[in-house]
Amino acid sequence: MDLLAQVMEDVVKRNPHETEFHQAISEVLESLEIVAKEHPEWVRAGVFNRFVEPERQIIFRVSWIDDAGNTQVNRGYRVQFNSAIGPYKGGLRFHPSVNASILKFLGFEQVLKNSLTGLPMGGAKGGSDFDPKGKSDGEIMRFCQSFMSELYRHIGQFTDVPAGDIGVGRREIGYLFGQYKRLVNDFSGVLTGKGCSWGGSLVRTEATGYGLCYIVEEALHKKNLSFDGARVSISGSGNVSIYAAEKAMQLGARVIAMSDSNGFIHDENGIDLDIMKDIKEVRKGRIREYIEYRQGARYYDGCNGIWKLKCDIALPCATQNEVDLDSAIALIQNGCFAVGEGANMPLTPEALRELIHNGVIYLPGKAANAGGVATSGLEMTQNSQRCSWAFDKVDIKLKCIMTDIFCQIDTVACRYGREGDYEFGANVAGFLKVAKAMLEQGIAY
Ligand code: NDP
Ligand code: 2IT
Image 1: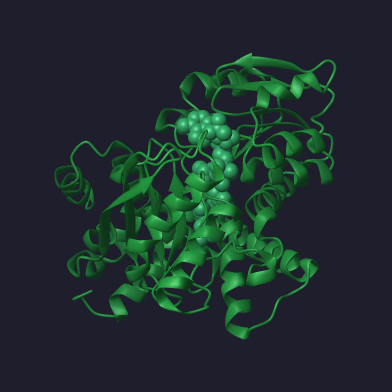
Image 2: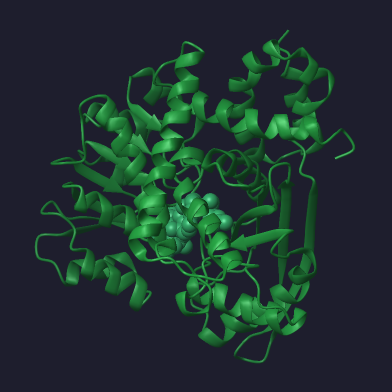
């Protein structure tokens, strides 16, 4: 019997109906089976059982008053998953789909991702089922203040350092930070993604998208391929997507498609990113507006169709399970040779298997989108040193970290005779560091 089958069974029993959490754990445990065989003492010390159980989960009520004077109630969460190698670290997501299963899968992935960055950060995730769409600035501010009025007692620069994720960007981090400071009377690096005039780091905004392209370029080079001249499809049009598109273009690619949760645009001549930034970042509009400014561009309802377009490289940067089996088959049939995950777990297990089976270069999110949290780590360093580094300095460090992550996952995959299996490489490389730290710190942890 597989050594870790019981661990998986216990996860399902203890967390019934939490399908995203089961999916993330099951993908990782498959890779770790060989580690368990090599380290029976880790099995005996319960390292695997402890690894899949969050250290702490906080759930709280967030009540706030909307513009019409009505009281609204949402649910807030923070899942502090693992602090073996550093303070809890990970983003906050505000989206109506948020629930315990999604935040547990994200917290779990964050533990491995943060380990791969080489920086001293544990893993966490949090957020709320609050829907920021259509809310006024005042409503966003009052929600953030109420959310922080509970969260503040659980976080701190040496305890837990939240950041942004879906629905949480610079504006929300500002309101959250302001409320933390008011409550605790402490100006510290308790959040990352801050404004650059009050402790934020240059490059944090660009970091996830840029880092994604840096690591994909590393993997492409290994096969004598590159972004140069490639056609690229990118799902989403938020923070990660926009800066993935920017870096892909700088590396010579033509980005032909982007999306939001309503539909996608196809611009065969290459997307005009200034128009896209104006619509999405400045006016917070919908992607369909793009075709009003670009002749020849087309808009289609529905998100899945983006994967049916012919592209060389696909960068899913929107949300979990956005690429299903049919989409993966279409990508392969159209000659797509690389998939890099800007989003967390954007591929269904069936889609993932299909891509790997067909020899597509595949870079899993926990490695490929680690540039965001890595730069958050660099923001924490600058906060501790009370200084701010120049854009190029941070960008070079980000590039080094992404190259190092590629080297780690490639080396580990090769060491176990699984060359090119970066999913396996990322799971094992990320795990080993955390597992050793857990063992050294004793069991009552
Ligand atoms: P944003 O909120 O800036 O953008 C999210 C984008 O994804 C929007 O275009 C949104 O469309 C789309 N989207 C969100 N939910 C869905 C859904 N259920 N179905 C279809 N499309 C959806 O978020 P980010 O760019 O920050 O995050 C995108 C992904 O990257 C997430 O998976 C996140 O976890 C991951 N990530 C983010 C990092 C960061 O630093 N921000 C770091 C590492 C990973 P719409 O506007 O219509 O909702
Ligand atoms: O998924 C992620 O890595 C993030 N949302 C970024 C987390 C962070 O702490 O910067």
